Image 1 (cartoon, one colour):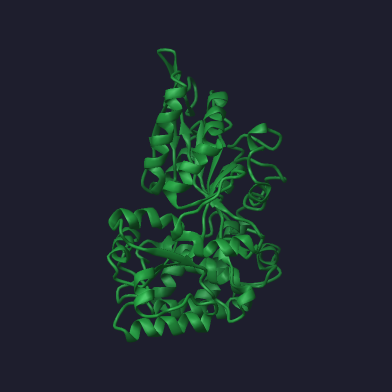
Image 2 (cartoon, helix red, strand yellow):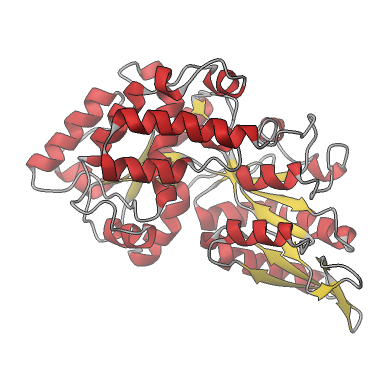
Length: 416
């Protein structure tokens, strides 16, 4: 993402995938059976499966000639890439504005929606955020932004109140809060680096706040390096590791959600997407959220946000009209409101707002335009930064890590 655009990025994806093979090729499109068009909704986001199913059921009641089934497999991004390679694509995809979206655009696998009325109900800043993810989008829109997210610090309001803690606005204040939590015999953070992607939650925030404002463009152009610019970022990443439990590389995301729900740490470096899972484990937990302040200059500390879910219609679809009809249903104000209420998310749909108390602490950042983007959404699609971050916490070799970032980024960039 182009650095620090003052935008909200959303995140959920639903994908409608056909279930029958086309004659003479490997591509799957929606099938027609007994007068019904059957579409499969392929989602790369496990947390939203229940609400997607609920909304799909409502859609089917109003459109009895269309049948939707939800498919949200484990390792969904890998599954989608495999299907792309096999020319086995769905009618619709639901994913984040990330490397998976970029890969589909670069493969000409999505329909151009730039001049389609389907995007008229979407806030323009989110449409603008799609640019730069793919290497050849040519300024066009290939997805409908739907839900947006926020990445920062979830905190247990009860523990903060009991210890008399205030929300920190600077890095030094964050460290002071962490020390008070430790001194009280409690754990500041719960870290879940068994799942490599979770390390990107704090990498993205720290990098977004501290890296040069033109870093992403300059790195892409070969004008700068991680080694020259990311030393402080890596130092603070290492410090974060000292605030977690002993086995930070042995705990999964799901285990971390459960542990935080049980009050095993005062804070949790995750996004709003984790709140619904945490509340499933403990409906009574009182959660808040604040931006992780990576800098001692409060003006540099932003909430990092992106497109959590967008909808795209694949270019191989035989049922693009039905797929578009489903997207139009999902982007109706009342349905978009149901989605963000269930997911504690924010919306890219015009006039749809989030009022849940769990995320009110970050609303001020949105109102004031203090928004940073997810840097990794603009990395080359084959650049596996998450695994490198995970490896850093194992070896703790700053110099080697910085060199690896440059080497692997450049290698991935040369393939595009």
